Each structure stands twice: as C-alpha cells, then as structure tokens.
Length: 288
Image 1 (spheres, one colour):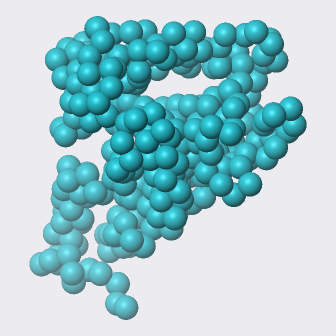
Image 2: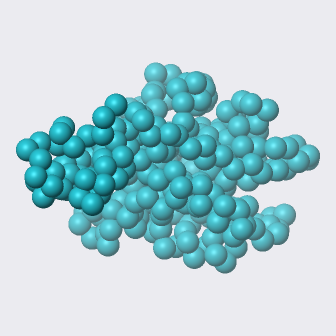
Image 3: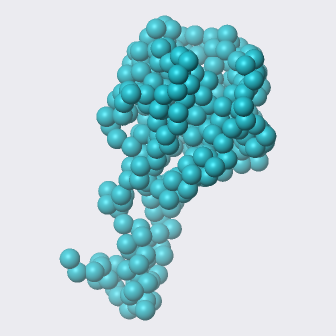
C-alpha cells in the first residue's frame, strides 16, 4: 500500500517536461469595424506565439518612442495573454505576480509598492507589456484580455491588489473604463524614457464590477469596459479550462519550479520511502 501510494505521488510530482500542456483558448465573436469577427483569447503556450506577441509589443512601443528591444518573460511569475484575429496576434498583455524579485513597478515606484505590500491583505500583481494592433480598435478585445488575466489571477494566485503603470495621458481612460485609481505623483520610467503614473485596482472591485455588468448590453456612450467582459457562462467555461490546466501547466511551466514547493514534495516522498523500508527514493521508482 505504501509503495502504491508512493508511485501515485511520484507520478503526480514528475518533472515539468513530462506534463502535458492544455490549450487555454476561448473563442468569441467581436464587433470590429462594424462586423462580427472571430477572435481567439488565449494563454501563450509556445515560443512561436510568444515571438509574435513580442513583435507586436516592440512595434507599438517603437511607434510611441519607448524602444524596440523589449522581451516577454517566460517564467512562473509571468503569464502572457493574447488575442488573435485571422491567425494574427492583435493584442497582448502580461500578468506579473509579486515575488522576492519584485515587480516592474519597483523600478520607478519602489517605496510606494513597498508600502502597499505591507498594507495589502494578500499578494500584489501588475499588468504590464500591453500592446494592441492599431488596425483593430475594439473595446471587447481589451476587455477580453483583461478578463482572461482576472480569471487566471483569481484561480492561481492570492493577489488582492492589481497595479498598472501608464502614461499620464491614459490615466483618465483607466479610471473611467476599469476603475483604477492613481497612486502617488507622476515620475519618469527610465526603461522607456517616458512619464509614468502608478495606478491601483482592488481585485474585489474587479469582481464586483464583473458580476454587476459583464455581458450586459453596453450603451453607445458607456464609459466602462465591464459590459464588454465575458458573460457568466463564458467565464465559467474559461475558469474550468484554467483549473484543469493548473498553474503549473500554463505557459509550459510547473509550480515545482518554486523551490519551497519542490522541497515539500521531496520531503513527502522521502517520508514514504522511509516508511516502506527503502534506503533511498531510487529503489522505489517503477521499473522502466
């Protein structure tokens, strides 16, 4: 029984390279230029899509004068979401979760981020690397990516506060459309050589707005993105996909990359091996 229990755990905690990737893609018909078109919202799972998203990011950043050598991180703390139209990436954003290494906002707003860390009920995270094809002007595309990030973040992190760093010209947009609030005063972001404002939005407020407005018929002059979010049935479908995939299988990485998690797993396996009378774990591995 102990050996069987060990083998079960051994299979569960096998190396990330043998874990299958699950496709996390949601299809939606979005009104663009007066007609409905099929848009795919997904979590990046391969290098090809990551390269396409990076190309879009650098193209749009270069156009704004922010430089053209930006990269998209591929690690356990960063998850990138994309929107595709006609097999082309037309939108991208990355959700970054706080860690000992900090967040991008720490480069410009270190003391503000530190103060909020101390007061936040849970963890903090940020949206970064936002870019959208200039030829695709659609609130639903932005809303869809934001909603994907919200679903993922609430499924796999304990973040209670979301941050975004924006050009001061865009502050009013994020206040009206999503409910962000400014934190501190304007500063200069050295990485892009441009003025910047830090903005904050509590995750509970996002959840409340989604419940109240998502999937409702937006008014022509509505100043909110929340009516453009996925309706409840679509959110449930996406959440099921993300829960099946698990945080470790999103983006081809595994939670075991976290040293603390790996150490806990190793201790459990060693305890089973010791209880079963084996001198080491290797003796308990199933024969090839």
